[in-house]
Length: 108
Ligand code: FES
Image (tube, rainbow, N blue to C red; front, top):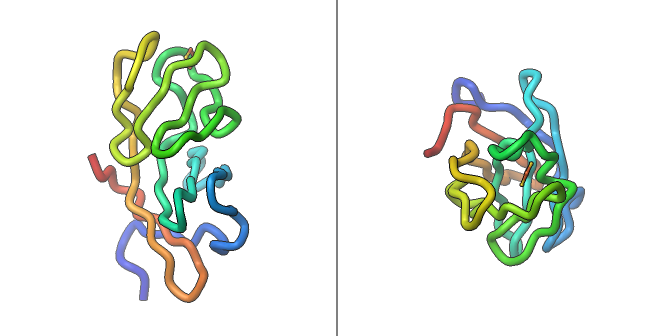
């Protein structure tokens, strides 16, 4: 049985290394990233002006917003440069039998 407030997202093979994919969970857009086989998740909304983060570029552990170039650490949600000043939410994700799961309670 899944821990409370946890949800099944999709399969690990849907997100090749170095890429990201958006899922909708409880009405929220969640970006899930694969960095060297490890999975991370943040909300898909830039804290600067609502940009769709998963449409941006992922470099190592940083996603760059496609709108004005703010970057966030996908492990913590913390902004790494202007114009973003506040963190985005990050979530705990894990893989079991190739299925990606997420816990919707905030990890930070
Ligand atoms: S909306 Fe993301 S940097 Fe402005």
